[in-house]
Length: 496
Image (tube, rainbow, N blue to C red):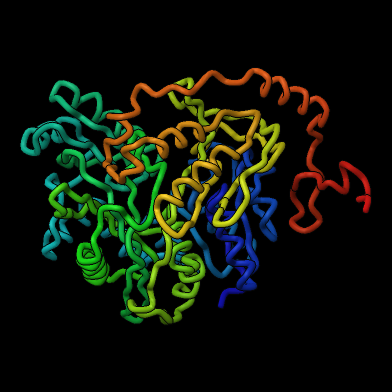
């Protein structure tokens, strides 16, 4: 087993990976940019290495800098988290060539499946039903416009090298194609370092269902059932749940078998997710394979009792899976809400700034994966996700009620968040009936607006900020970097 690993990421996912590493007795090294000198993942790590300015291309997307950081820290393995370079085959290959272990699939598998068009061709060759569209990617808007005529409208322009809604545009009419195409290419290049896009037919009201898989290097592959990810805003998932209210045991078994077949066909190793669109007639079509840990992995962990990060590390270390398919017996219903620093009153634009007060919900069945703390300044340079709020309950109605209560108790002052919006979605009759689909939010919540904010709360936040004076965090003797001041330092000795 590894003695030390470097996490090539930031925020809540870096913190979450570190928690499992520490349980396993593995030392952790963080990387950080100028904007993240006081970030929580830096405070949580055993050590941290500065890798450059805030601009992602100069820090979190800089392959040579990250590998150099791992060598400086004497790390034996690198975990990429999600986003940034997590699905970049060039990065995985550079890690492999350096003699460091990449905690994820082999670079050749990432190259084959991470390129969405290559994955589509592979699935077609393997007999897996695929959404109609192109099987080659391009940077040429004119060539793509010709291909669009054959695919037909409406369609999606999608980044070939990434996911998470980045580099994706819906095009309803031919006259809108040129602008949407160029916009998708630019966003994909900025997010993934590769602007190539492909085209895909847009289906009417499908569900987004993904199957979690685990595969070791000894030929063993299992799935851990599905996650429903149909609640999406701007093509990015914001609420996920498991099990899906749409799947029967028979359909679940069929989709799970298809996911395992896809993994075996690709020679897959480590954790991954096979994504499908489920039509109203219960026919499912292959969408893509995410060759990394998913943002929504905690809800699978909640219902199965499995630690997916631990499994990733063990597989990367060469261990055989100690699980068989019959060992996977999910229990209960879990929901995840992604907490974003964004302003619902301003078109959900990012809402960076200093967190003046932070008190997340607590209680039975609540899990909170978090990358922030009170007094931290949320930067403008990265994705605005702050945390992931998850609940587990015996059944779906209880899970919805528990999540609604947790969102109502989520206290964060200083910046805006999307908690009220997600509470409204969970409270809708359609969601409660399980009638979800990928256009759920655009169709039912396009005119949603938050209730008038309570001016007294903002006044209170200002008073709290003045009283606390938000002193600079104290230095950490453990990591040699920064951490928030403790109550012992701010309030003096405890009184019993």
